[in-house]
Length: 424
Image 1 (cartoon, rainbow, N blue to C red):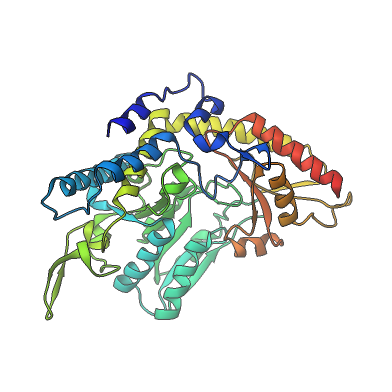
Image 2: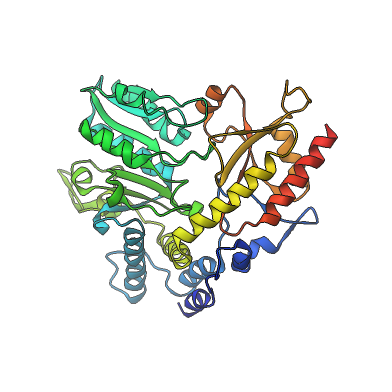
């Protein structure tokens, strides 16, 4: 693994949290789109990957590729060691109590589906309730609707206020003796709203209700400590925190995971198998059926080391400063309408097509024209259609920031939007 280690040694943290000093670590940022320098502002969908992550994946396939666990030969032992070291890296990154509480999945979506299926099987019956919020991603809505169809549970929805904040006055009224779980996002992927999850968890625990946190949009941007939060479950994706696609994490307290049945059967999740009876493996392997993506797990561990090396507090401070600059510059554009409570690394907006603001330029048109200028943004409902209905719109343009973005990127976005506005 010498090449990968060298890549990490060559990454010198900036004296000040200025994104441009990190751009050389991300090879894709040097390319051009339609002959123009790439301005990548779609980090809420996925982040780009630094050399050290790419090198780690390449090195493992070149030198350590073998199926993990139970193999007695050298390569299998090495691959298993790296895989379990990756689990320990994740444990330390989110401050889980034990690696038994860290389950590798394909991403946030699978992690939430795992909880919905297995927690639902173990603890929920017809008429029991799950509370979600109006700002949830589809991944934290649809799994509960599937459980609703299977078991007849009740889905309750906490509303948001007109300024894009969770209605904390309405939330306590949703709890009842039949409430079995509260599942909410830490940071909205549309509004950029940072929910007060510690307060929400305390409120739920006062009603003896466990809490699942969708941390897909928080883990890349701020320190997340599961013990300090006291959440019961937490899910995030590797590809949003500079790691590979196809790998994610479900954190769960052992007291719950021990009582939940397996999600899938076969491979590493077994203890012993006969045609009469099967016993299951210990945690966390009980929930990791089949061959895991051990190479992606290694890539995720290197990505987490990368951001920890820079410092999550520094990343949060830099992105807040850059998000504030972006918000201020965008608000100076005539006809600009930004959704959400204020400056954030996630900025969703629409642009008025007429001076009276009676209609917006279609978000798809705006995003497509920005793309021709080399500016990558996301358009549409962002997998949050119920939130769009609440806002009374079909979709938005979303610019989402990462540690390698700069004020020059924001200036290019503003210039591009003004150019499009003149066309209309």
